[in-house]
Image (tube, rainbow, N blue to C red; front, top):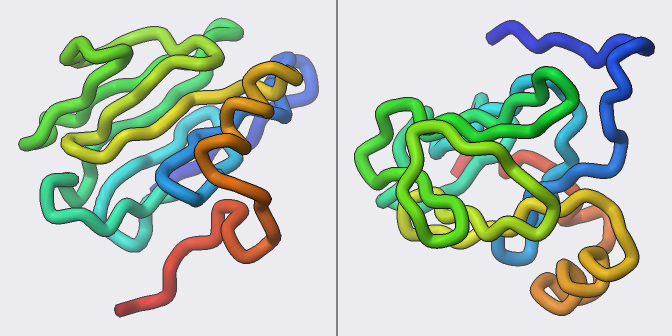
Length: 131
């Protein structure tokens, strides 16, 4: 898996997150893989989620989500998508798993905390160990 690091001239936002259940995954690369496999950046251990389900990409100063021919589908604000722009506050479904795409603004940070409760380092984007 090739990861491209943000370059200093790309205006890459440092405060974008995907909130899944009680976990907050910082979006720190131009391409973030989502799925059941443990080598994804965002690992979701749910049977309805494909091993390699979707990607969040940052291109041309815009985040987008791309379904990778998953079985369960990817949805943004309730609509099935193959590709969709992401804006702060968008509701995302990875198959049957709800998530929230957030860029750090006071209002949306408050909304994310209402979903997750107080966070600590144990839930900030750590990949689960083999189970």
